[in-house]
Amino acid sequence: MIRHIVLTRFAPETPEETVAAIYAGLSALTDRLPGARDFVGGPSSSPEDLERGYTHAFTIDFHSWADLEAYARDPDHRALGARIVENALGGLDGILVVDLDLPDPARDGAPGDARRPPRRP
Image (cartoon, rainbow, N blue to C red; front, side, top):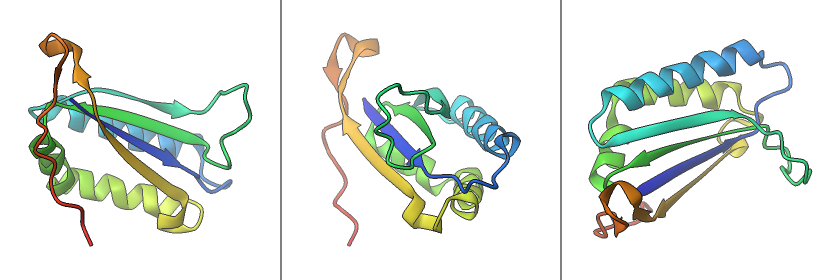
């Protein structure tokens, strides 16, 4: 299983309704795409105060790297991603993405598709 994690520093003037609409679109996209599941997202409420300006986060789980790649190429994902960049403090500088290859509890703890795609230059 690949867990796609996105942290965002939304600009202070970005209304919470805008973020909610973007996240609703990502949730619908997750429901539509085969191999994608379990969208979870929202504002940070950490009591540790270590967000370093990242105000919101979301995760989506994917069965394989190929499923994550299909999500990345999807036109709806590209449009929603553009809205995130448009509303992030500093554009792309306000976004952090991490992908973890984890055991998949839905498949009896078996790891995801270990054939990780090559890193982009």
